[in-house]
Image (cartoon, rainbow, N blue to C red; front, top):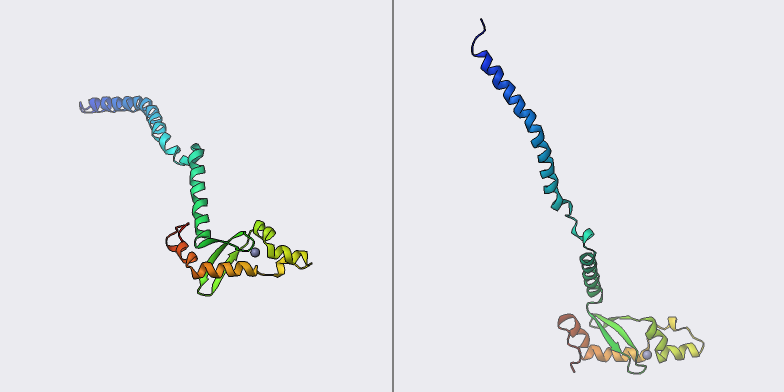
Amino acid sequence: MTPPKDAPDVDELARSMVLLHGGHDDEDHDHDHAAGRAGPWSKAPNFASDPDRAAAVRAATARDRERYLTSGLAPVDCRFCHVTVEVKKLGPEHTAVQWNSEATARCAYFAEVRACGGQSSRSKSCPKLSDSIKHAVAEGCLEKVSSAPSPGDG
Ligand SMILES: [Zn+2]
């Protein structure tokens, strides 16, 4: 005599196993779903698929770095030889002068030193330019740069 309870239980068990088997198909669908959901996420490194944006970000970073490096630098014209160098005021009596190759080449004082057989690299600065820088400092031109840049003022 088999207990009547047993049969339905096995039947139910079998049905649920069928359901599990059927669920196999659903799992495949789930995979598709997962892939679909992973799509946007896999694009997370946006810059890779967006070179323009990446370039823009790089440019902005470079701009920032340049602004940082050149912040406080003011162009000062040598009143004697009319070259322009970048000058940064470090203190009341202390200025840093950034010579570029063009200014070094065109500075009349350095040219004279070279003409006389001297070495322009041995002279730290064109004395005429030093005067111009002193004037610029006296006029507060270098101060303005760091606080509120207003070229053509005064
Ligand atoms: Zn000069």
